[in-house]
Image (cartoon, rainbow, N blue to C red; front, side, top):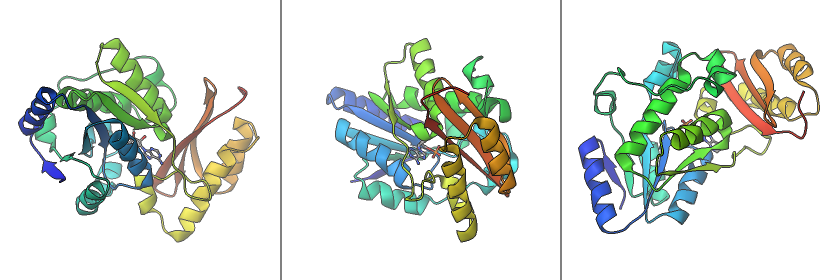
Length: 258
Ligand code: AMP
């Protein structure tokens, strides 16, 4: 049975019981509006753990734009239905006050990888991400926590944080799940109409082409995207663009550096 939990103390109690029963816990942190990308993380967690906790929390400290935060899709009823379908044990849905009793007085900061690409274009974003993930890992004491390669820079930073702070949770990266034309599933895709969705595929297709970063930027700009960055770093090509008001990010492995 899938159970909805909204209090930190209840979640910790469940963790304690699991520990006594020697049950392993897999945590899948999300901001909701679940799609097949999230479902693949849940499935992997289900396969590898006795208990699965799915967290649904739209973490406002990682939004550097208030408009982006207020526009973010909120679909808890559907999310709970999907969690049930995927056999999730606990859906953890805390509110801001529950997760931030300090009102964000304390935060986790990284001062290298978090300052480029997403971090450069969204100041403070990774402080918010790392802080909320640290809180969720502390509350759940998860044996394993699952994150998507869709947000590869985030995944690397979370792995780095887990190492730096000797966290006992294993951080597991999961492949990006895409629609048939290549667009990565994303909660923000639901903000796009049919025509915009078709155009969004061009972002992935161009990013994955053999053009260099400058040429990709030029092609996407000519197609009407506003390019935040197209950059190659440590064997991957990363990109972020605006399609009208909606910001899309993606990354792919590459065989060479530009
Ligand atoms: P979000 O709800 O967007 O914060 O994402 C929650 C988790 O799902 C993060 O670890 C994301 O990287 C992961 N995720 C989001 N989209 C995808 C996707 N298309 N494929 C795989 N993982 C994804």
